[in-house]
Image (cartoon, rainbow, N blue to C red; front, side, top):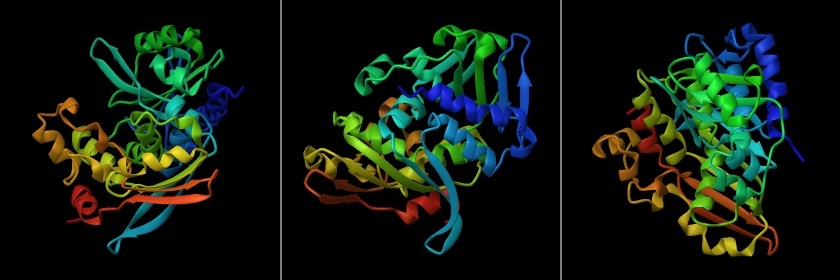
Length: 315
């Protein structure tokens, strides 16, 4: 069986050995844990953002960049494709582990989640277990973890702390903008899970989203990075399951009652309480589906250039 931690470890090792090639900074703590700073104090960039996203998806995706336009405004786009969508997205990339210790906080994603089984029901759904002596985790945080935090991650994964490898970047950074936009495919797979559609029926997936500009603080950055997919994420899914026809119209973000304005504004109106926001908003803007058993194609949703540009600050 595929070990997503082993695959991600190979990507991490190059990043750790040649951090200067990625505008990153390598740290090894006294307890042996290894950290690569991709944006807290380091500059980061496209190479680091690509590697961060690939590690986050357990080494099971290809990531690239291109220049595109939204209403004639030129900007970079990220393209992501994977032949293992449920494992790469739900088993690794989903930000399903809140890492807290004293004053430290980070959203944890990446293959280490599979060792911690966090959350357990996710791995039961996709029928996956990883067996690896190393844990590779991606931390979305404004600060670097200390030895106690890395020990807590090691304990959660049941590995030696010297075998814990972390890549770290704040939301408000170049790598932060890239890796959140790089979750475009994940939002589609996650939405199917929310709708109680079996994500294992998705054979392969491909998606794109604009890379948003870096904002001045994490809350504003969280707004525009989410909007990259909510209002302009375009996803193609290849599915073996004729029953997808019953779910198509429920997938895109424009079916949500919270749809229609930049996420930061919606979040602010909800007093910055995620639970007051309709979870159906966290979905891609437009989805096309090829259902292979009957040879049918479906299309749902639409991109929203105006709200995207407003969120990014171009309007």
